[in-house]
Amino acid sequence: MNIHQNIGPNATEAAFSDAYAAVRASLPGVGDGSLAGIRDAAMARFKALGLPHRRIEAWHYTDLRRLLGEACASIRESDAADLYAADRGGVATQAAFAGLKPARLVFAAGRFQPGLSDLEGLGDGVDIGPLSAGPLPDWALAEIAARRPAGDNAVFDLATALMTDGALIRVTKGHNPARPIEIVSLSSGGGSVLRHVVVLEDDAVLRLIEHAGGEGAMSLTAMTVVLGDRARLDHVKIQDEGRATTHLAPMTGQVGAGACINAFTLTLGAALAREERDIRFAGEDTRGSISGAFLLSGRTHADTTLCIDHANTGGQSREIFKGIVDGAAKSVVQTSVVVAAGAQKTDARQGVHVLLLSEDAEHNTKPELEIYADDVQCAHGATVGELDETALFYLMSRGITRSVAQAMLIEAFVFGAMEEIADDEFRGVICVLAAARLDERKAHG
Image 1 (cartoon, rainbow, N blue to C red):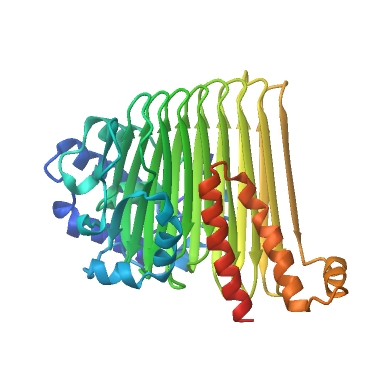
Image 2: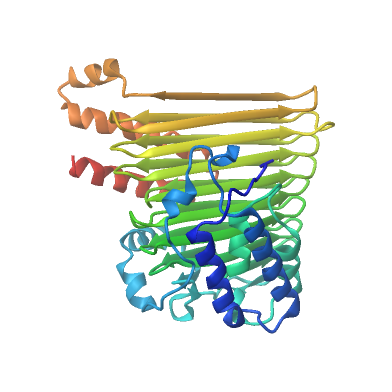
């Protein structure tokens, strides 16, 4: 749990507060008293907390106040079609996933783009649409109102207050959509603020793809994920935004009895990318893998912070991350597992493994175990190092050049993380995208 001490407002916080006052009357759901009240309460919490700072333990390695600078949540209008076409990473992602024929919700500059979206062919049992379409369905409103990360989370509150749109997805009991669903979020100008809600009822199944791209100053996307008993979610995310973008993605989730969540994030870009995952394994015999890979260069800063709360017996969780850090880039991975009293037979594994490819590269790891039960198996491990010179020598002794040998070892290392992706088709696509980025790195020396 974060202890959030406000150290005083700064210009960025004032800009967010002013932006809310200026746009409140035009935000989706302005005529809905319940939603307006939720927004006001969230902004009040944000004002009381202020932006996170390094005195907060969970933000010790990421100075959001400095990195965010004077970015403001106001949205400047952009031509969505041009923005979509210009998103190089998005074009590559669309091509890679094309064979899976996903349904698609596209958000550009914080607004749903029906002309670029495709919601047909999902079959019965799927409620799907943008937050901005009209009055929120009761199930979505209830989740936005009631479910927040444990402890204080000013970034999540900011997203709830300023959300201009978002994906609302519910798969009803026992259903499995005929197509995967893809959410594309492209930021531009001042940025975008989205709020996604994904609900799987008992025995439901969903394959979910996320792509975050664009060149906006700030991309803020909060997500709520709820899995009913015996539900299954396979979720992959590709984060590939501009080198001047601040990407903030807090997520809160709950997993029911016998349910399974497999989530994987491939982090490729942004000045700052911070992924937060706060997931409660509420039911018995829950299973999940919350894992990822990051390929960083230049002066990028990537922070993955997650907490898995095992609240019941028989839960299994894996948090496995691998990354390469080059140039003056910086990576942070903070993994926490809490095992509640009575949550016997829990099996939780954490692993973080990073290659530093330059003298200026930096990585910070902080694994945590908080155990209140006595019949559990929990472990964590972390390694940070350079390429193995012995392995390089072995390859070079067989006529392989040093640069090619380095590329082979890097690819083999990173692809080890992809083994955590349970969905075979998703794994294949993520490997293709990672290989393409590694090829770009090799081409640029």
